[in-house]
Length: 204
Image 1 (tube, rainbow, N blue to C red):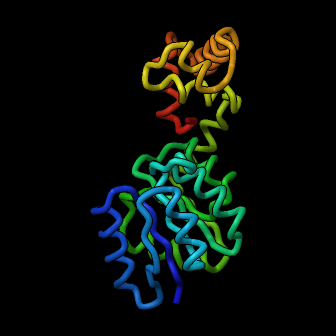
Image 2 (cartoon, rainbow, N blue to C red; image 1 turned 120 degrees about the horizontal axis):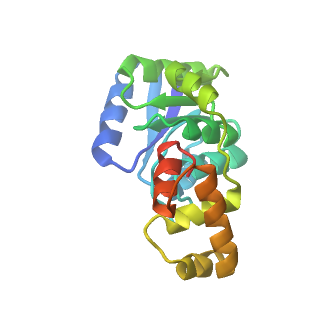
Image 3 (cartoon, rainbow, N blue to C red; image 1 turned 90 degrees about the horizontal axis):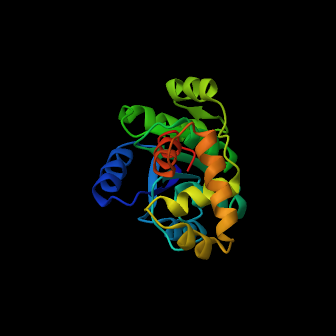
């Protein structure tokens, strides 16, 4: 029996996936989490074989599913990780692989593909949506540095330069420099456009 931890912040989606996997004779959902913080606690308690993690989940210490994946991979390396996402963004794929994920599946895939992905990663194989893999190879890696990404994320909700500087403990001048670099690297005209472009490509 393959023991699975399922994490998704949308209760209805999480319940549907759990019910679907529950129909498989060799898969058992042993825990369900609604945010990144609960993932680590439940994984420590239940020791799952495979964790299915949504990309976009809230959390006070784990801001999204990719952060949770990286920490889970560090603390429980025997657990295989499959990242689930509604949006097949190439940047998410590369970040998921760097976080230690063994699989990356788009949520609108047929149900049997998700069950098959669980089995395959449990066997030590990698599973990646083929269309997304091709797109990821063609688009390349994110050109943003870690700090440029942090600045764009902090500025995403319309925060001022001063607000971003306080949040990240940087000077206003440094924030402006990072924003300018990010705007140039995304071929944007404004920081709001840079945020939209970077988010659409999965770089944030």
